[in-house]
Amino acid sequence: MSSLSLPRVLQQRKSSLEIEREHFEKFQSASIGKAINQHESPVKEKHIRSAILGTFHEKCAETFWKCVLQLPILDNRIVAWKFCHVLHKVLREGHPQVISNSLLYRSKIEDLGKLWGHLREGYGKLIQHYCQLLCAKLDFHHRNPRFPGNLNLSKDELESIGDNDINNYFQMSVEMFDYMDEILALQSAIFGSLDMSRSNSMTSSGQCRLAP
Image 1 (cartoon, rainbow, N blue to C red):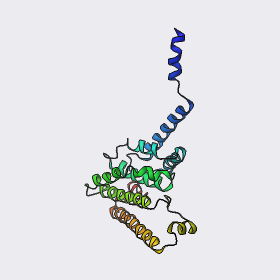
Image 2: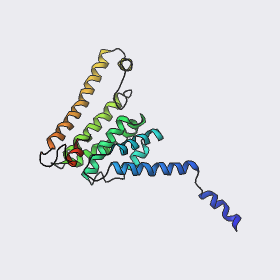
Image 3: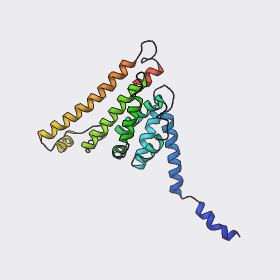
Image 4: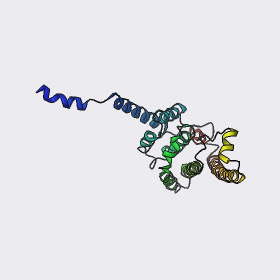
């Protein structure tokens, strides 16, 4: 009887790679859950850093998106706001493959912004502006795939991308200014939402809004 059950035991035993993958996903889920929580307080950098390092570990953003889509970003305004903040950081500092992975979810980001945009006050409009910024960033990188997420380029790299053609430089400048317009719109919305008595840079709620 024991010999008959041996194959089943062997089949149930997980490989070291499967075990490592499970541990990685659990750690990422915990870190991302701690970063994108329901508390109106700034996101802790150590949790964002774990999410960023996770993209380099697997060389993509598959696990990141798997985790964030399980969070109540459609139901809780603080969770939605922190999602935008963390995603922005991951796009800027994560593995280069993160941007192309995230383009697959562009419509979800856009829909999230439209949903929360129905709220006329508080985080609703802020989330809408942030989602518009994230979509603008993804669109920019889609049209200019040689730009890294943090937009840092050497002079030689920029000249190589522009191919010494003034028309290319002009087009890149126009797209960059469009991207900057979204950044300024978000900044203006955040500062306009602050209240001297309740939400300012000295309060937890104010820091939550100013963190990006």
